[in-house]
Image (tube, rainbow, N blue to C red; front, side, top):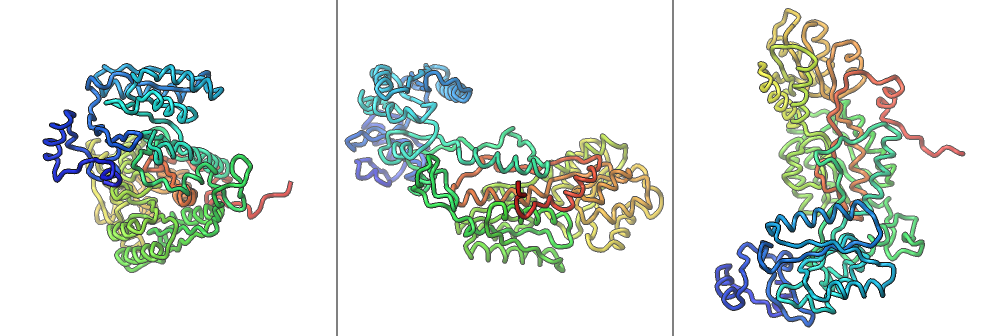
Amino acid sequence: RRGFGELGVSFFESKEECCEIWFKSTEVACLLDAPSNSTEYSKYNTTSEDGNATIPFARRQLGMESYTHALYISPLGEKNSAYQQRFDGYRDRLLESTNSSMHVEWFELNISTPESMSLRLNNELGDCKYQFILLGSSRMAAATVKAVRAAGCHNKDVPTKVGTFDTSEEIFDLVFATRQLEFAVDQYNHMQGWAPVHFAALYVTTGIVLSSPPEGLYLSGPVLYTQGDTSVTDTLRTCADAAFPVCPNTLGPDGNPSKCPCSDRSKIVIGGVVHGITSDTFWDAVFAAAAQGADDMGVDLRFDRFEPQESNEILFRKMSAKILSLCQGGVDGLFVSLSDPVIVDAVKICQELNVPVMSINAGFAESKEIGLIHHVGMVESNAGYQAGFKMAELATFDKAICLNYESGIAVVQQRCDGFKEAIGELGIEYGEVRVPDDNEARFKNIVETEIGATGDWSGYAILIAGSPLIPPSLDLKKVHAGVVMGSFDTNDLTNEAIDNGDLLFAIDQQPYLQGYIPLPILTHAAKTKQLFLNHAIESGTSFVTSSPNEKLANCVAGSFPVCPEHPHE
């Protein structure tokens, strides 16, 4: 209701009353499913220039006779595939919505001088035949809305709606202040600048690359800002135009002093809480990478590692307490592994405190369900599923067993569940054995009780679902040579086992990325509020079937050490 009551907009006690009274009095369709909150309501209303309310834009289905023409405008002479793709999407969606009855035209505008631009727009828009105008570039936005208003197109029974690609302070004023633009589409050009540099630097120094997501791209847009959007603050508008300067730089992109205060990254605090205890070597790379990421970004990292606990229940309680302590202490961002529901509950409290939280390694489904900003890792069930088919590709066996943690960790269970699904589709017998991750004698006894204390175990295949289980599993291979094995996670031991033929493969989820990637994302987001549209930032499912050369192996073992200072030229 914000603002509309003063403009003469009527409010009713129910949707039915609205339809009965409003429809009879104005003879327009009633929008029964219109959102009731003020932010969304603003999308379905237009106001005249003198402040009087006009009829609500209630006809959501565009197949009505009122909607006949749409226009797309791009700069003359600028051959750019992006303009073509934007037009194609605009045209196709409008034709789909109107059963192909709408005429969608493309107009190229000479924007070399304001005078010629205004003249052409006045000529093109003077008859008000277009109900929708989309601008391929924001550079002609002010002139376009001026021409629309000069012709009175905004006051027609079906007023002309104008939207644009790209944003600036001027564009935000046209959307939020004067409301002459219906929307603006942001592609987060700041993110398009920093992300390739970070990822390229990672590749050059480590050889590691992100896995390609299902969408094929890591998307920085489109992000749609409409008239009712309250997320764009004055500071954010100013700093976006100034490219979010980082101290000691106080200049804007044009070389002049920035209107946006520079960001002192040493005051940015990023927290991390994961279930990777000190005895689990998989997490060595995660912690080393996070430390390097914090050093690269110049931020304060609060990321402590837990010692082994008497039970996972105790570990998860301590993780939950640490998460709450960090969020209540005022961190600027947090990354966590969602290894148990009690962790999820703690994270929800962080969300209520408006702390940006992303997950790593464990909890992809939970992360998406509760609306965390990103998940960095691999989709565990998919990895287990792929492991089943990879094992069947490399060996012949009659029964497959997944070695799971006795104490139970959700991420490991998801791996076994995916493996079970694949083995079932292959028509092979499946079994799951829960084993301790810190008692090799009990481990051996449990597995031999399941399969047999004697024999070479020919016809059996074992998937090792976590790195702590690799050493005792390989010890069993020495006794029962006929069994074939594959493993999650990679290290020196798996590399040697692959070379010796004791492992068919090891699955590399690139833990270095899981530790490193949250730091630049959370650091930039603390000031820019810009995030990828993809929820999952996929560190990969990569099957390693041969060991790396000695140089690479040494770098992996040392978590890709970075020199403390640049060499002198």
